Image: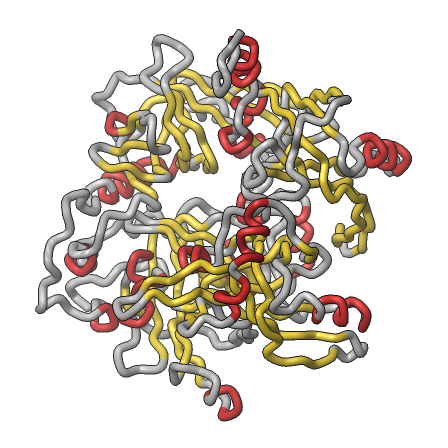
Length: 633
């Protein structure tokens, strides 16, 4: 018999059989795991989208799956299939609130982490996963306890949904919508602190809340400065140096919190509400209108993504109020089916996309003209763009050239009194075209690398590397030489056709014996693996070698390098995007990649910045989009 405070062998065995929810990160881990969860906030939600110009109404079942650890929870869902609402109601009845389930052979839905608000950013497909009821309560917490704090919000680098436990300490202002519903700007605090050079100030955050009825607003008023609340599905994003947090229509909710974290916060309410030093870590959301100017006929200053990042926007203008930059050989991730692609009023296309080059990844706003150009659509084909996004069939070229407008938006006299700065800096992509493969990086890029030499190494970048320099790593997605990176841009060559396997939620494409198209002397072979939808699968397949050639060539973006499953391969390469190169362009593309491989940011300890480095806005000018500056200009 085990002594008090010790686990018996049976208990230890039972503990090791279950995978902590926070460790289920990949489909492979999910399929091999078994977890016990409690269902919270189960509901069938109705939503709509446009398909071929028509509005389609549909439903899905959604719930919170809470693990034995209150800070660890995720989403569970099942979408309506074949208009079978009865089956969806049965799933809702099965996975009712406060029921307990043992899940195994877990199937994950392919959702972007930025759209998942739960602490464990995965979505479990309840229809495809194996489930068995747990009849006896295993001692689960009542409600989740989100681990995020208000002070953490400062670390947001791009758009992200999240949950938050906080106290509404005061109502800043009240108003009503055009329909008469109450709206309030409130200040939230949770006791977390933001350290400064002078003191340690309490972090706070403003948030605009929309109430459906007067009674709901009255109930909320009763919790102000008295009760910690659980705020579901908030969305944060960065605009220049500022962080904005707002609710998501139809998804954001609030309710009284519960649990250990809630009780600790209750005890600290007097000190939180009466804090002497408070620092706001976010700003109320503002609307930025789109621009209608054509920016293709003027010169633009050559730059890189690293200099467009949030940490550097204050250095991009100098004394000017506006400047036009150009970034070449950029990988722009197309929007996902669930991404927002419209302005707040829904009248124009507008989105935020991740842009990657060899220096860093940044999230930039794209106006409609740039979005349509990257999708190879005409200015009047907005509806077609929307349909392609909804169907998950939107495609961008892997390499693009962007013209980016950096400008200061002047504040109105009424708002200036409430702001600590005279203007906000906005960075917007106003023009975009597929990259001209004959325009390789020239010596002017060295001037830019002199600027970023004093900056710390960024792993969130895309490395242009020969395959022989790529290695698997236990800590990082990819090791490219002596650097760890999140993505790699490579040029692949295959003498064999790809083959695919149909999965429950898509398609798995495999290509064997792939080689490096930029290194003819290398004999190393690799396996290439891609997970995609059935509709997108042709884009991930090597076609038969063209007539007169022994191999097909493709540009690929890699997101992971793993140990090979076949002994004849050096490694397995996991592909995020792939683009087959036309036979007539292969020579130019090989030369372009070989030139790009020469420009590598240093992985050494950053050196002290040189005082004579030219400011970004005074760098050499690109006379045409897609072009690099030349010494003759």
